[in-house]
Length: 136
Image 1 (tube, one colour):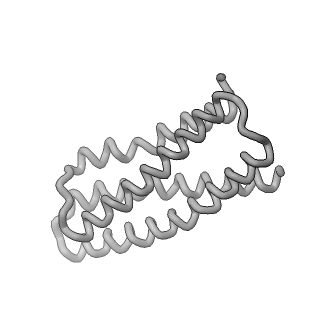
Image 2 (cartoon, one colour):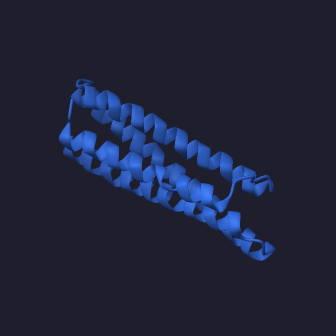
Image 3 (tube, rainbow, N blue to C red):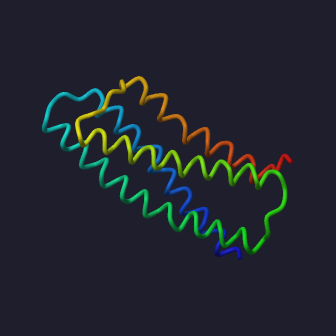
């Protein structure tokens, strides 16, 4: 089980790295006006979103494997699973925002994306505290 846990942590860290950077690209996309730069940033965002999605799958599957191995007990675990579901929703929201940028339909400001960029930091902070401290 320790190997499963190690790989779970590795994929979660990698997944969140993408979730930290993708909204940062959105900040730049929301500010950019040059067509060549827009296309370059969109290409970066597309590749990062695909790669981040590939990393999220083993992170979630290994987490489910751990859950089945250790059982589902403790309020902390219920809260962690709820935050993982929110993280998956955030990931899909990034995909939706990327499609809007690709279609030229973004209506949000770069300031909004700066706040949106902070969400995965808060999610990871809460998840790590729940897993390590197990407050309830």
